[in-house]
Amino acid sequence: MDASPLVGIIMGSRNDYAVMRGAAEMLAEFGVPHEVRVVSAHRTPDLLFEYASTAASRGLRVIIAGAGGAAHLPGMVAAKTVVPVLGVPIPATMLQGMDSLMSIVQMPKGVPVGTLAIGAPGAANAGILAAQIIATTDAALREKLTAWRAARRDEVLAQTVGDEIEVKA
Image 1 (cartoon, helix red, strand yellow):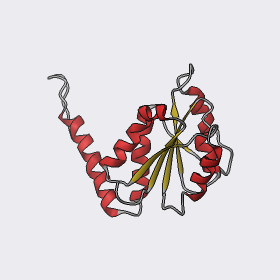
Image 2: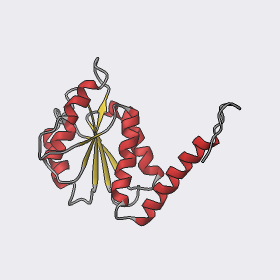
Image 3: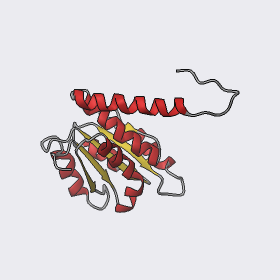
Image 4: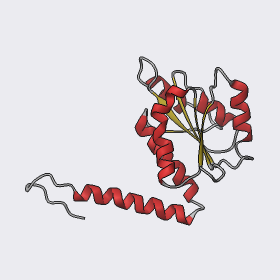
């Protein structure tokens, strides 16, 4: 995107992008400038600290952090910035993301991380939630989100199952 990013999407490895792609796609759909980076809590801790500690000064308003396994990335980022962090558990182990969910959601008092659902649905919702956070001060984006929601409603209302079900608006 051409404009300075308002949302940072980070993940522990390039493989995580298969899940995190949904966040980027939702932000692109709403025209929210964003960046996508690999930042590993365990393999590149200095990069993590730099990324998080400079996020606000670089204009980021929300950070979406996807992490699998021990899932330290969202919490460590949140510990180093006051920019809101949204955590997306990645199903990367035999526990299919339950380990990541438990890690991300169990942040201590004073270091909040908004935790989304495991996997691709959580990533897409993180993108939408980030857009909603930014829309609190951006009327045009708020209108896009309202129109998008109305279109989702209309898609459901247009579905027919058969004569036995009457759909009312």
